[in-house]
Length: 243
Image (cartoon, rainbow, N blue to C red; front, side, top):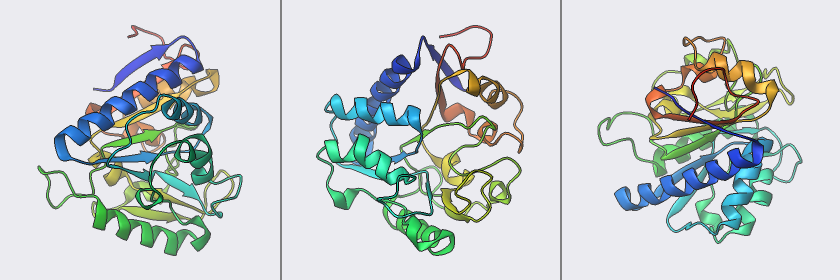
């Protein structure tokens, strides 16, 4: 079951999310000696990253990955990497060798192929599923008004990725730019924890749909709910009991 936490406003959401990410990274290091964190783009995750940097979290033995990327260069204003670098990576002591960006400038095909190989080489599967996908420790996700996560869009063929697919190219994103790279649903399912952040009334319908019956029309509803934590503000929260 998804753990849903509501906060009064976007700043409180970002603060709570930053605390949770730091705690989960500590737990992963304690359990396995290394923590694998995947970041997403978006304005709400950006504030979370800024607060993580300001909190001087322990980045020892943390490997940083990305959930998706637009097919642009790393200095492009549309780059998820650039946002994460400005908000978090350049404000911390994370060595560049432990930051694994998606090379969007290579295009969807080659960029996804290279990233998939890098994940397989560096991130082991879960002990209980030794033939499964790479098991990231924490994946930070936003959600679009249409219910998309990473660059997995409603009804897209990428939602049908086989179990052994780790990263896919996207050529026809309904949001510009059309070409992107994304982690697959099997990789998101294998993650030990997914943290989804949503703020604003424009996300309320998507959050409600995410908590409803799983459907390809709402990719966020296909996440593994027992490993999903959603932190939303009052404007984005569905009606009903709240934590």
